[in-house]
Length: 600
Image 1 (spheres, one colour):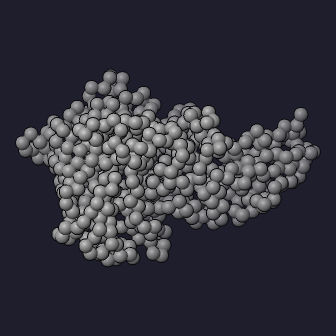
Image 2 (tube, rainbow, N blue to C red):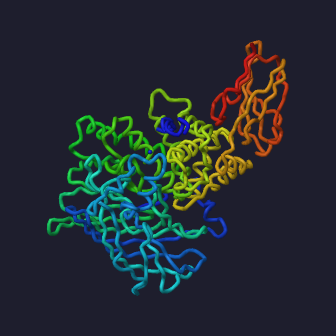
Image 3 (cartoon, rainbow, N blue to C red):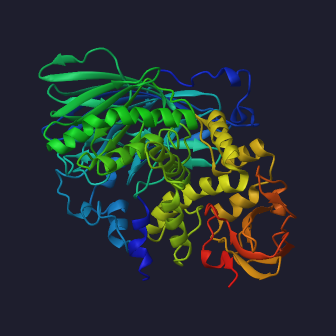
C-alpha cells in the first residue's frame, strides 16, 4: 500500500427558531416553493430513570408521528444505536476487518463483557393504544404496523424500553478516558427518517446520522449529585426524591437530543449580548493548565458564534453548550461533546469545528450517512475561516491544508467519489480526506469559480432557503445558480460525482503567444497572471464556455475556452517573460508543476 494511505490525515487538522430578517420579509423560501417538497415530523415525550451504579436505565417514550408524505406507510423503523456496542455487531466486525481501523474502536467492542456492552431492549410497542409486532435486527427495530399510516395522518406510538450504557468507545458511553461518567448521544430509540427517497434505516456501522425534525420533552431522573447538561431548555429547578433529581428539558424544532452528566462537572455560563446563553461543562479535577483553558474558552466561543451567525445565518436557539465528554469532538442539538485535556489551540479549534456543525448538518440537516462531505466539508470550510478571523497574523488561504489533503487523495489512486455512502469507503482515511478535505475544497473552489462575494451570498441564501429542512447536494449548486445566473451543473457533476481531476498546464510561450493545455478531465475557468519582459504585469480571465458567464473580476477577460478543446492559445500585448495559472492556488489543480512558465 502506498505511504499515502497511512499519512493522509497529517493534512486534516469543529424556543425560538428563525430570527426575522426585515430584508427578506415577504420572500418565499425556495425549499417551500418547490413543487411537492415535504418532510416528516415527530414529537417525543420521554421519561427516563437512570441508575448510575449499573449504568442501566428504563424509559417510556410517547412518539407522535405526522406523515406529511404523499405515501401510505405500512411500516416504520427505529434506530437502536447502543446495540452497536456488542461483540459481533456490524460496527465491531467492520472495525476488525477494515485495513485501517479507527484506533478509537479497533477490536475493543469484541472484548466487552456483558456488564460493559450497550443495548436498547424494546419491551412493548403500541400504535394508537394497540400492541404491534416488531423485530430487533442489529441496530434497527423493524416495525410492522397494524394499520397503515395515511398521508397527513398523525399516529401515536408508545414504547417501554430498557437500556444499558456501554463503556465509552465511539461518541457515546460511560467513563470515557478522561473520566466523564455519562456521554449520552444516540441513546434512545430514534425513529428513522422517511423522505422522497424512502426510508433511511441505516445500520449503525461507524458513521453519522440523519433524523426527523420535531419537538422533544424529556424528563431525566438521575442521582442527585450529578450535574446534567445538553440539548433543550431546563424547565424550572430539578425536583428531588429518594436521592435522585428529575431534570425536565424541552427542545423545540430539533432532530436529536443529547445529554451528558458527571458528579464533578463545573458549570460556567457566558451570556452573549443579543445572543444565546453559552454553557460550559468540564470536570473540576482537570490539571490546572486545562482548567485555565476552559476558563479562557467562553469569550472566544462567543466570537465564533457571532462569526457563524454573520457569515451563514442567525443562530436560532436560546442556548448552546460545550461539554467535556465523548472521544474527540462530535456535534449535537444545541451542544457538542469534546474531550477536554487539550492545549488551548486544540480546545478552541475543536470547539470551532463542532459549533460550526450547528449550521452545517444541524440546521441545514443533510443526510450525513449519504452526503458526509456536505456537513464535514462545509463545516471545515467555515470553521477554518472563523479560526482565521481570530488570528492577528491572518493566513491569506486558511483552506490550504484542505487543498493539500484533497490533492494528496486525488493523486493517491485510492480516491472514491463523494457519492460514496459514508460506510462504504474502502479505507477510513480515504473517507476522512474526501469528507473533510474535498468537501471543504468544494466550497472554497466554488468561490474561485463564481467569485468570493457570490459565494458569500450563496451560503447565506442556502441557509435562508434550507434551514430546518433536509437539503441535498444539488441544492447548494442550484442556490449558486440562482445567485449568479451561471450554469454550474458541470462543477457538481465532475467534482462531487466523479473522481475526475483538474490539471491545466502551460504548453508553450513563443514571443507574446501563450498556449495552454487541459490535461485533466474536469473543466474550469482559468485565472492567468502574465509578467512581460519589460517588467509590467497583466491578469487574464479565460471563461469556461459551458458556464455561460464570467465571475466578477478586474482581470482582462478574453475568449471562452470550450472544454472539448485540449489546447487554448491567445496573443498577449507584449513579449512574455513568465506565466502562472491560478496564482491564488484556489483551483485544486493536482499538478502545479506545469502551472508556471518562466523565460530562461
